Image (cartoon, rainbow, N blue to C red; front, top):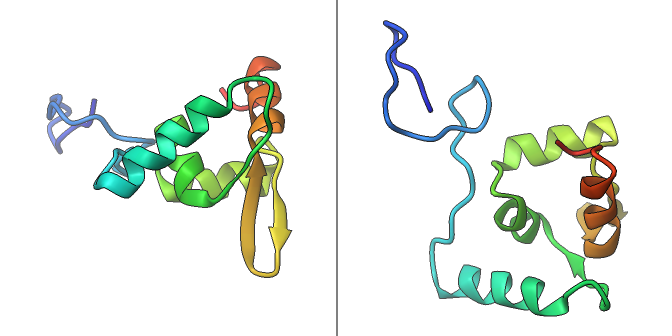
Length: 99
């Protein structure tokens, strides 16, 4: 829960102390991304872009970049773009590296 200046709960879920909002599906495209990620299951491996990872983990973009920079989320760069393997991400979560 987020906190106001008096320390009371605001009723909003936030991602971290900086008041970042977790990723939530905003449109049909986001819902299709989540469907595609979930359909891949444990067998198939897909490469996700940053928005897909945000939606999959329910984290903000700032938190995602911080986790990639710290090495908690295994990522590859393709030019200037970040790509994350779903299989490697699931393994990092299972190993407790992300949470």
